[in-house]
Amino acid sequence: NGPREDGRDIGDKPLGAVAAQDAGETEVQFIELAGPAADRNAELSSLVWYGDWLLLITENPFIYASDGDVGKFYALEKDDILDYLAADAPEPLEPRPVPLYGSDIVDAVGGYAVAFDGFESAAVQTGLGYFVDDRIFLTIEADTVSAADPSMRAYLVSGAIMPGLSGIQLDMESFIEI
Image (tube, rainbow, N blue to C red; front, side, top):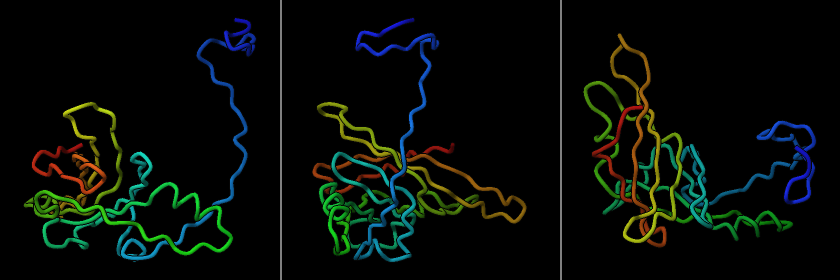
């Protein structure tokens, strides 16, 4: 095998092998939040980066619904997080709300067989190009409502991220069971 183009010698390791490197340890630093996202009822279930914004996914966003939206996630700007981590005595960060639009979340998932139990994870797809919105994909946990069937269900739903992270348009009409 020998040296690579960048000068590093991979010796007799098989091509495609990855050498383990010591990543070291980094001390965990808690970030104190303020506002609705700091409330234990927010039940932040997932974090996902969207450009320079860290989206805080609330498990039950409908509890933060207001006129015109069906709920809220929250977001922190990367620079604010870095400033917080560098400060000796930082003030709590107050994430900005990211409204969710679409049909009622609980009604869309709930029904005869299952009941909405919350958003559990998220992934973002960006850079799709002109005429196509950036997308967010979310998993939903749902309880069966039958005592004879105590199992859980999982669903995948997508949404369009609106310009400037001004909101997310959820497509609750076409979620799928996974």
